[in-house]
Length: 208
Ligand code: B12
Image (cartoon, rainbow, N blue to C red):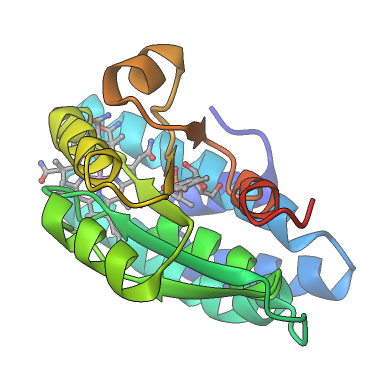
């Protein structure tokens, strides 16, 4: 069970408390990604309660809505601004999966670091990743995944980009990424940490 007050508040679906704590912490100068991490910790607890049958789909949906509201306050702090253009990154959640809150955080961080981000949204088919990579002439395609049942789709998305003949690196991200997933999908980079996306983009674009 989460110990942090903010994590507990979102785990208990206390919307007003969550929003007040986010504002309070931002004002107190807490790093925005630390606030995101507390929210994420509480959301994992919501997921655990869902798995145990204590929560239902309606609670998952509500938890997502609370996070979206909280992100409105966090976004300006995560996105920063005014950085020089560094390159384009194509991103999307893979086919079959509609979770997008984590992906949206990655989008904000990349934009804040100076990247032009082409966000394909959720439930993105392999050919869409390839088409966008070709159209934008990007050097990096990023994919997000939360559902283990869509692992094979992630592999298909990665392989489609790899087999397209384009000179593009593929980064996969989400809470279920580990060495086995990396091996299975054949991706170039993988991480469960949103801020790694900016480090990897800098490496790909030679701006490290
Ligand atoms: C909110 C939520 C929903 C919302 C999503 C709303 C939205 N707009 O995204 C709704 C209600 C739609 C939903 C639906 C479902 N969900 Co759901 N959901 C969650 C929950 C509670 C929180 C997810 C979340 O947003 N976390 C907060 C964000 C910030 O964290 P994050 O996504 O992990 O992202 C962070 C990192 O992973 C990383 N990251 C993410 N993407 C990327 C990409 C890159 C490139 C990088 C570098 C990093 C990175 O950075 C982020 C910031 O730190 C999780 C619980 C959990 N353990 O996560 C379950 C969970 C993911 N859901 C689950 C399930 C089963 C479902 C449903 C199948 C339920 C159902 N019976 O219908 C459906 C599937 C719908 C579909 N086809 O996708 C399971 C998945 C189990 C599994 N491993 O396969 C979980 C784990 C719950 C559980 N424990 O059972 N869900």
